[in-house]
Amino acid sequence: MLVIVEAGGFGIGGVNFDAHIRRNSTDLEDLFIAHIAGIDIFARSLLVAEKILNESDYKKLRKERYASFDNGNGARFEKVELKLEDLREIALKSGEPKQISGKQELFEQIINLYI
Image 1 (cartoon, helix red, strand yellow):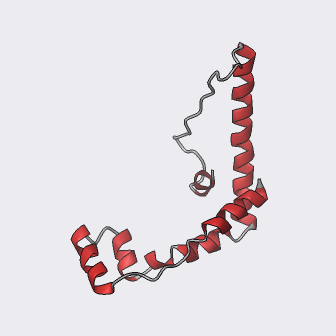
Image 2: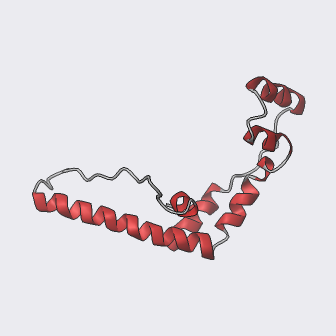
Image 3: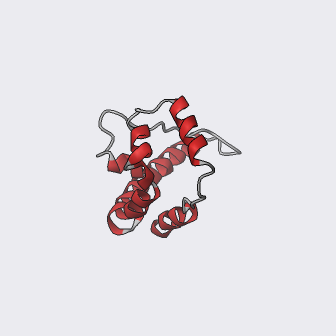
């Protein structure tokens, strides 16, 4: 939902949503409840996504995480100016890259704080 909110909404697209009969929930009422609960979760997740994007450091941290794509070879790669062979040559010249944490646990915790 973070991606959908940042893109300005659904536009002409949407999400694939379905509820299936499972376990021993076999009544038509069960299927109805599953659909209502699923749509409710989508609505709640849109509200959570809006808060994350406007109240947390999520966007700042993400910009820092992908900063290597803002200039140099990272920007050239993002603009599709480099071929696979170019990337191989860059890797051979550069050697093993410095390991930098993607801070995945922090990103997940930010999201969890708003749920």
